[in-house]
Image (cartoon, rainbow over all chains, first blue to last red; front, side, top):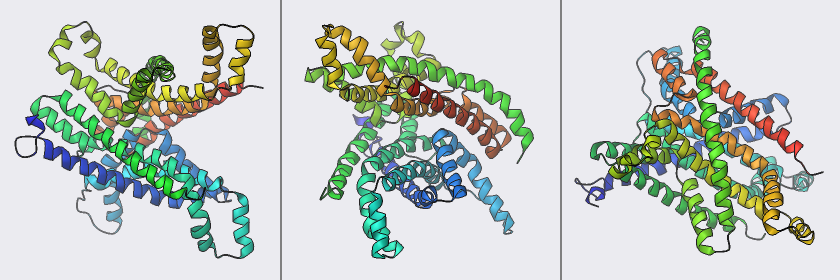
Length: 230
Length: 224
């Protein structure tokens, strides 16, 4: 067990920081995903055919293409795209984007496609009478969304969002190909230098299992909280 | 946009699609048996057996597929004894390691899908079989399994698409599937967007085909 101890002789502390990195990337990606779904869910629900088409092609393409391919696109194409935009504004130096940002954005876009579908489903399964009642009562649009639709939507969305969280958490393991030192990358480094891949990948699997287990416990509590009164 | 690279990479990516389809079909084939096996264990009355089946699906659904592939491909080869057994002939090949990891992974998801299908079978169907004097073994194989498979078709269709995306991870253990070839072309030509469009279209086309196949099967085997 010396090999897994904290300090200079073991890999314990490295793996601990890598776990924190995985959590940080997952949360950032999830939030970026929410941002994307805040944009695309209204487009999906709008009556405009063109806006529907945009939102549908986003969710279909992202959910139909492997996550790894999306990550490669961002990893190899990310700084090129930014440099191209910068060159329009007259900046020609080399720009390198941080692996954390590239990874979070790539995973965030994937996560966003899944959560868009979840929010769309949740809003659509709210009783139509609720929307009509709000209109009849003459509520302002943002108030009726925040006070009436949102709480009901969250209650319906949380169980499915927990699935999206699990997918996002597991997808972050793919960012290891870009060199960001999260659990998978750290295990790869440790396995390479100690020649003990079985131990380190098993430890990585255990850490992921622990993360999914703990987050499920937490989400179940949220679920109970948001289902009060039902 | 560089169309010459897109045209030049298309045949390479299409021949890599054959590798992807092979990986997908073999892992789904083995995964189906694993899934059915563990779904049946889950329904066992012995709590120890059903807990074991639950643990299997929990572990494989709770960890990333990438870790599973790495444990099987890099990890198992480390055991000295393992390398002397006949199994080493299979496990030294990245191709079979990937298929074993995919099959175990999809087996875990399939077992959950089938379990819930078994549990939602209307008891009336089984009772009808019993009252006709059919033995419980035949009821299980000839009534429960076909009905469960029909009921799990929509969920299984999603699982096939997820698995198709999962096969892209085979590129991390040196296999040249669509993603592996795409990465190779990107790193030699530095044209990520063009290659992504071509490779992504192939994947989307495959998703489209699977989606429609499942829809067709659902319609064909729907209860009137």
